[in-house]
Image (cartoon, rainbow, N blue to C red; front, side, top):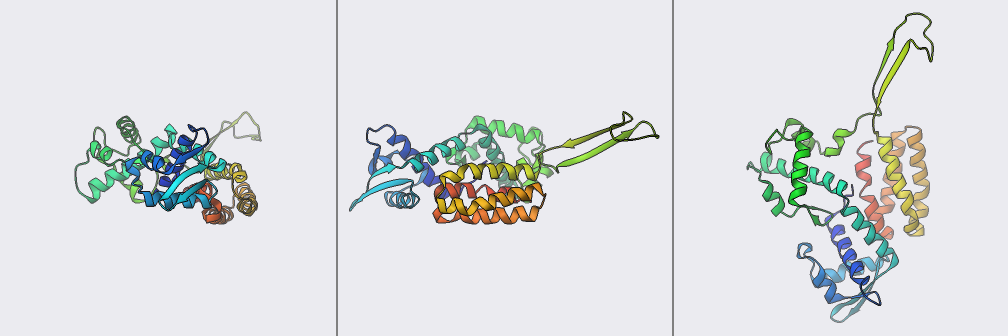
Length: 295
């Protein structure tokens, strides 16, 4: 599940719309006025703000802007920008990620309405507030599905939007609904011995069962795979800097050294958050805090 700052969502939304419009033209350029008119009002982007966003994306080698005295005249989307726009569209339309994000957003909204504002929550109010995932508003059907899942996870009282104690604690402890499914690497091991004599490894008199579920190591490994696969698309300077850190983090996972992994991830985030890493770096960096919270 991808988490981005609102300003980054706006910028990537502009990039995505520009890339879509450019694909329909013969020379790949998009008029500045046409791009502004194509932006949804929910983004709240003015002509001046669009100029600023395009200039920032130019610095990240995502687009080429043509400016005149009147402002932005045209935009060309570079290959790096097309790749990032395509990834952004895949991310924000992923049905699983959208539903997971909605569960968290809805639960926090319900907490605010009930525990802080002291009002009776109505699902329609949530929809009218235009909450969404990466710039695409949630639908009524998605909210209904999320409500059912929150009931099933014992976060809401049966047949109502009242929160259970588990639901309140999930919000108050700043946890995600996803965290409820995470447990230690081995939650329990049970050994049964049916004969008190001659017990040895592999003996038929001994049976052992273990419950093993996803661990912090699985999440870190998944994140490192994503970062590793993205390094080729990052500026060489950034890729060269984080490559040894990725390897260090992998070795830390293998050795089960949480502090080592945490230091490596923190350093990786620092390089990815740097302006030189561009929008892709920022996009990757936002996923690191969620994983570090498990360490």
